[in-house]
Amino acid sequence: MKKLSILLFVLLAFNSCGGDSFDAEVEKNKIFDVHDEVMPKIGEVMNLKKKVLEKADGLEGEPANELRDLAAELDNASEAMMSWMRDWSKNSSQYMEMKNGAEAQKKYLAAEMKRVEEVKEAINGSIAKAKEALK
Image (tube, rainbow, N blue to C red; front, side, top):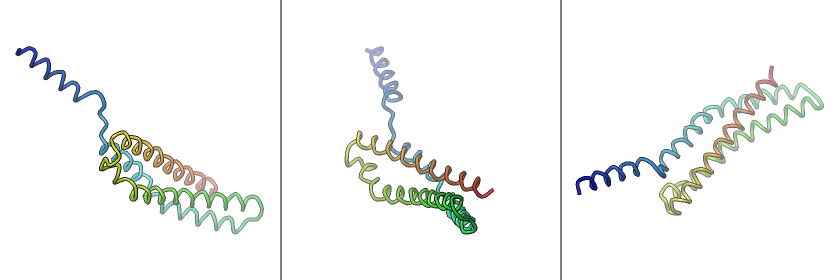
């Protein structure tokens, strides 16, 4: 009986450490790590947009159009962050409070991670393009 108790304890301990170790709070923190990495860059995005538009004003034709397109890309990257934050604020509580179940919570957090990564790429990519265009 003692061996059986020890075996059950070991199996329970092993099972609680392995298997499906999804932790919504950990996943949420990963999402906000990405957010916190790029959110401070919004000021830089807006500053670069202003500089790109100023440079475009001094040009004509295709070069000016390309810079205006780049300014729009910078604006879209900034708006993507604002949109993501509005949507998170509006929708996240129902998933974090498990009102839709564990599977829905996992799917939601995975989709939000993908979405915030896309925002990160848009912000970092548009910054890099703008810096290159302003050289």
